[in-house]
Picture 1: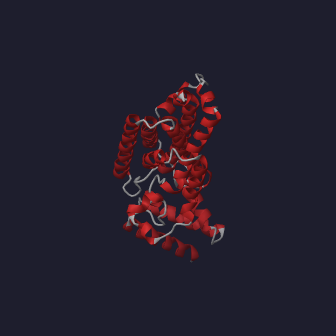
Picture 2 (picture 1 turned 135 degrees about the horizontal axis):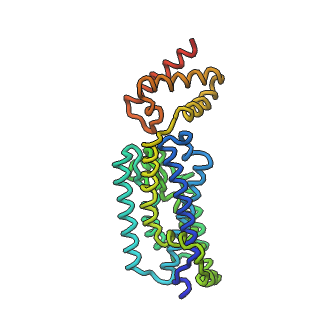
Length: 311
């Protein structure tokens, strides 16, 4: 029992590695946001898979750590203290992103998920391993089968059963992501029964102090790293603004060539880019969620260039 209550430094290291991976992803997202990479690169393809892998690892470690902290007896005071900190941080994230990105603010991101998953995880902590595995399978599979119109109401967006949700910079609903937390609990419980936790608690990892420190103060690192990275990229953009023209041409031409030939697409995309620059509205080409006036302007510009190239 004592071993499971001792801090396992390898868990801190694992959490630190996940945090470093998150910082790498967020830095890439910042480069994407300011136009230093191909538009949408951070939310598609391998980067999208990378982001989901990071989220899975974090939530797995949440479940694992939850068992380490309360697997041999619920400790109310530290539980309430940590939960309060997470809830406060999640609320701060919502307020900050609503101010900075009102069209894509975070209403149920990973911190919101961790807050609710912590409560749900403690509630099922005493269940047998087989039952937890079955529950994890149900949670992961449920979004593929649970569909109803009433889930589209904002009050149910946190569930993961909603088909129509607004644009948001971070969305980690309970279904299916809580399944990763349950699997973390299963792994910790199995490791405890096999004696692995006691052996892990004896391992010291003094060679990687920075990762361990980040893992021990994961909430602070999470709250601080993205504002710092975002500010650094913003400052760099003031000195050396990105040239979004080549990235736009590549993305526009690739999309256009699914319907037209390359010569037409290059001329058409060049027309859109040149006309937007002439009207001093180049930034509108990269708007993630343009307003109605911008949307109408873009539609007219696209129609104009398409007709000119056809002629």
